[in-house]
Amino acid sequence: MKETCLPAPCVRGRFAPSPSGRMHLGNIWCALLAWLSVRSQKGSMILRIEDLDTDRCRPEYAEQLMDDLHWLGLDWDEGPDQKQTDAPYFQSECAELYEQALKKISHRAQIYPCYCSRADLHTASAPHLSDGTVLYSGRCRHLSQEQRKTLEQSGRRPSLRVAVPDCTIQFTDGLYGFKEQNLCCECGDFLLRRSDGVFAYQLAVVVDDGRMNVTQIVRGRDLLSSTPRQIWLQTLLGLSQPDYIHTPLLCAQDGRRLSKREHDLDMSALRKRYTPAQLTGRLGFLAGLVPSDAECTPNDLISLFSWDKIPRQDVIIDTSNW
Ligand code: GLU
Ligand code: ZN
Image (tube, rainbow, N blue to C red; front, side):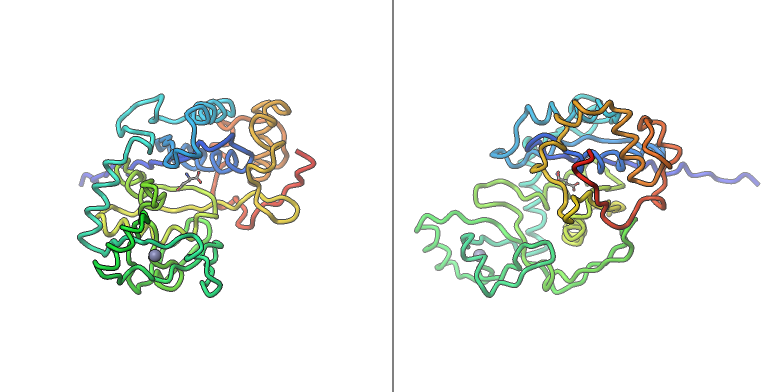
């Protein structure tokens, strides 16, 4: 009897950087792991520029980050400068899509204007969430039309929040295993659009990963706590759920995660001190893929890559030795 052989579903991963400054070692670390994961499964890679926040993002940074990724030896199959199957690849061009998604969500959940100022949100009694943000009290959820009108007339521009149900979202992260979060207690009604009209990352990322048919999301562990609300939005929008694999963060000796503050670890400084092969060798060694930090290319690491080898703990580096 002839065996029916279904083609393996193609893995689709993505880079989703925000062009709000020069990339640094932590960004490149995560990008390398995302790329290796996709390439080792013969999948395709998408580059999407997450430039929602037009105050902080600049086109030059987008150009620069593409150049930095290419310099290291990373590539992608679809993106602003590649095949354009799922254009646009800039979130700043997708307002209409996010608007449509808002409408769709509003049929299945309550979306309401929130007039709270920063000070209102950060009251002394506001409980803090694991990621340092505060749990929204739900203050504006039950305002009457009358009250809304008064607030509008006083010139307050509202943001838009979505009311979350008392439900627990569960998922299994590729590296960190089983996770669950109660949306009410551990997330709260969250923003879909800011008061200045900028759509929230949480909404945009779900819409874009959905329309680009992304099947695998590799990103820093700092976004682990955002995942349940993104999964919930996927269900409201009728989108399928990608696999999530969060990566450990690179941290300085004091345990702080590397950020744009460490200027000598941004790509401008790193490109002066390293060749791409030297930098890749050091990252491959940190990832546990090679026994030493000898020079190698991202391509060399593909056959050695396995998530089983990647550390679960954040990786502390001696910043003075980079
Ligand atoms: N744009 C986000 C960042 O640069 C990443 C979003 C994601 O990977 O989901 O932090
Ligand atoms: Zn409010």
